[in-house]
Structures are given as C-alpha cells and as structure tokens.
Length: 138
Image (cartoon, rainbow, N blue to C red; front, top):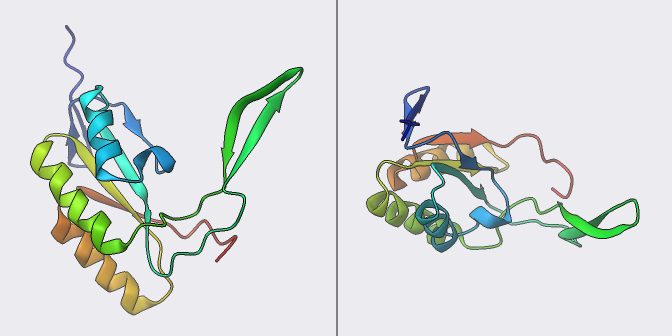
C-alpha cells in the first residue's frame, strides 16, 4: 500500500484527506469517529466567543428535478462551550497524536484573539485557522 503520510507546513498527518470546519467537525466524538474511519486530519468547527449563529443553519440544495441533493451550511460557529471544545481537542490529540487537528477560531477583540490562540495551542491544536471571513451574522 502507498505511503500517504503528509507534512504540510510542519503539520503531519497519516494522509492528505482532511475534513473542513463544518458541522461534522463540531465535537471530539465526531472527529474521533472520522479518524477511526480513515481521515487524516480535521479543522475543528469554528470556536469563539460570543456564539452568534443565524437561522436557518441548513438549507436544502436542489438540482434540476432532484430535491435535496445536498445541504448549504450557513452555520458560523459551534454552539458548544469553548471550554468543552478545548478539553475535547486535548482528548483527540491524546488518542490520535499522529492525526492533524486544526482549530478554527473567531472572536471579536484583540485580547480575545490573544487568549483563544493560547488556549488552542495549550489544548494541543497542530495549527490555527483564523476566521476573519464570516462576518455575516456577527
């Protein structure tokens, strides 16, 4: 079998197949299930304070005569407490030390940015996605 191990900017993973920041990466349980299924990395659903989401968080995508061929995701940020997510990042990295975990972060103030970056690093995140591109709903 081919060796698919990757090293992207110093972030190692068993393969180049990663999940993006989205509802399927909203908890440690979900990410561990993905890693068990063979995914090499995941970008944790966007963490931050305050939690501000708009409704509806999902919308059906229709194509030609086919109803609901997919979903649009307009969820901005996890609705789970930051402390829970940080604890779960730590758990995931203990169980899957060779898989990539990137923390997607979105906060409002300079002080919050400094703190959440430290918190994500301390939890064991391999990298950070600084989310400045989702202003709708915030």
